[in-house]
Image (cartoon, rainbow, N blue to C red):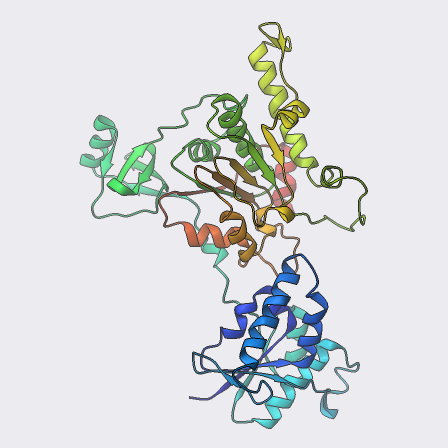
Length: 446
């Protein structure tokens, strides 16, 4: 078999340090320029810094086994080597004029292509511009896609089934139907149809049974109720104590965050099922950043959490209005405000920066804008869950603000696809906007 030589760009390793070992029996080349760029990130406390330090540990362990200059054999039979960076050749000087770091990495790949003409040399980068330049000088260029799902085929959380008369009668008469010849994912919703009638059911995998919705039946949840069928399905999962992780994917205005917070407040404040509602989101600005913000942790974090405050105010105001018949009081006592909920400890707003290392038992946790998380960050968050904790992930994989992440490689999409077979996991994709007609039009055409 023809040997392949993969030359890795810095962003591939920063995205996933284990990419070093992802090429099986082939040769992996790390230009010195990549090591220098990684060294610039190693002091950071964010994901880049952690990954940079992990790459250093991996390479140091390999160095102890042999010479990185000549190449160290891996457990899969491949080779990993660190190579001197090479300048571009004369034949491409009219294309790549300046010896930038990117061009030095491309030049290294060209050097190996010239030195080993019998091998297939591949430039691997998550930067589209690097792949374009590599292609322009005659190199094979690829994105690193080992951690990707097919977004067009992403699990939606619901499907359809045409029933026989016997199964339809069983569903109507006994309230359930067992299926031995059909299988769905745990907690998947199924529209069962017979002639012109439809019943929405949910798959209960332990008994291989379809049952109509049992948890949410149109009742108010902390002052709000579902406006469409998708929201009904979402609330059925959010209010079910047996489902420990719920993911809600949808475009802006579909109600993902509002539904999650309403369910959380209802189960923390009204039903006392969890000790507190913890809400967090990745800190990443839309547009040009304003720089460092003054004040305490709470004061720094408040601008990023303003969308959460907005939704909270809507929920608490609506809940108080309904509960008090509009007079602002119940049994002569004033209903608590958002600030009072925060002061009492019912609600905690926490930056994701500080969640590493924590153990969070018996809490209702909402991670908003989860599409901006890497798969590793998603793993870190989910593994914080202690006994009795429920996690809700909300996000829109089409609105990603992090470089090198896309709709197929972000942590939210990965969680939906990889966890769908587990009995304590539930997912629903929301498509119908409910914020306003204008918001729905904007989401549709932009």
